[in-house]
Image 1: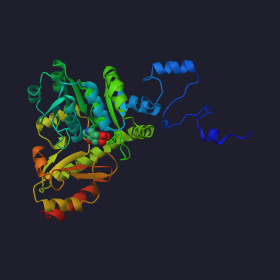
Image 2: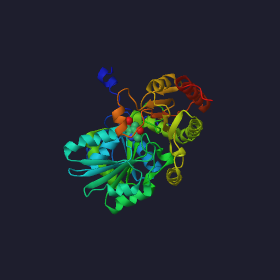
Image 3: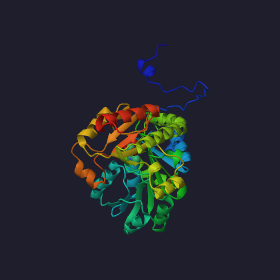
Image 4: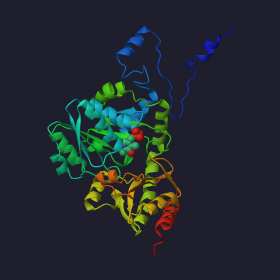
Amino acid sequence: MEKRIEDICSSIPLDRMNYRPVAPEIVMTSSFHFSDFAEYAAASKNQFKDFVYTRGSNPTTLLLEEKLAELECGERCKVFASGMGAISAALVSCLKQGDHVLFVNTVYSTTLSFIKFMTRYGITWTVVNTTDVTEVANALKTQTKIIYFESPSTQKFELIDLDQVACLAQSNDILTIMDNTWATPVFQNPLNYGIDLVIHSCSKYIGGHSDIVCGAVIGSQRLIEQIERSGFLYMGATCSPMNSFLALRGLRTLPIRMQSQQENALEIVTSLQADPRIEKIFHPYCADNTQKQLSQTYLRGYSSLFAFQMLSKELTRFERFINELNEFILGVSWGGYESMILPVYKGNNQQELKTRGLDVTHTRMYVGLSHPKTLIRAIQNALDAAYGICK
Ligand SMILES: *Cc1c(COP(=O)(O)O)cnc(C)c1O
């Protein structure tokens, strides 16, 4: 009997082979089908546990969630289509009209833009630019519901005492959310110090190859369920099973990449420290004693994203430095193979930089997987071309 073309195009996989793939399966499907009414009815009652529709759950994404939860020492994880998907869902799910969010230290700029947007829904917020927990305590309001921070922080890479923040928050019935993208679960586990929720942009080190955008939130069963049932389900920032697979693949090499990139970065930081044309380096490795102590308490390693500022503030020279810097790609994001450079100066934003407390020559550098000697030579050449050879 001849088959109809529609039947051939319909490609529901057959259960015909017993196979055991070494790599995780990419379950690239929008929905899941049921063998009979009873199975359908049971799954519909339990849509967060059983596989019904990929916007709710998917086996490839679930495997990633289980691994991230375990790596962060959390009960559960929810994976999102991006870091911002995770951040906005966590904030929306834990806030209501009238609540206040306290941001500590320098936080990823889009996170701050998001909360500014939320003022139209009756959320208020404050930023305290400090790593001193006493100042954090002084900035609390009666309506404060969340303390949100990064440690080390964006651009300045300063740490805060996690034990102290968690203790302060718990005694005031406040939730703590920490973005741990810089350290990854390999180098730091904030939940172990009493932080309530940990955020990751898996677009960075976890993905590791500059080819996906993905995010995650990890915490207790109760909090993740709360996020799953509101911010996750309603805002719909679902990660594609393909991207979950790529993040799972990234995890396989995460520990060795972090180790190798730490070594490369510290070699480069050390050479920059010795260079008189560099005024200041922002990396916990070369911070003051208090910061160094916090690193020793909370970090198991140093990652390869940091910043520095030039001694000379001449912008034509600075632009020349950026243009002459071979081996580093000029662009946003980080965490992949290629080394990257990102000046905060964009040609006309001196005023904005002043309010953010950043020098006009503040430059973020990401050390990827190239040989550190090659990178050091490239930096020296660019510094020589822009600022002159130093004796
Ligand atoms: C990149 C980044 C984010 C946002 O993640 P996306 O995946 O780009 O949405 C949030 N926090 C930090 C610290 C980041 O570096």
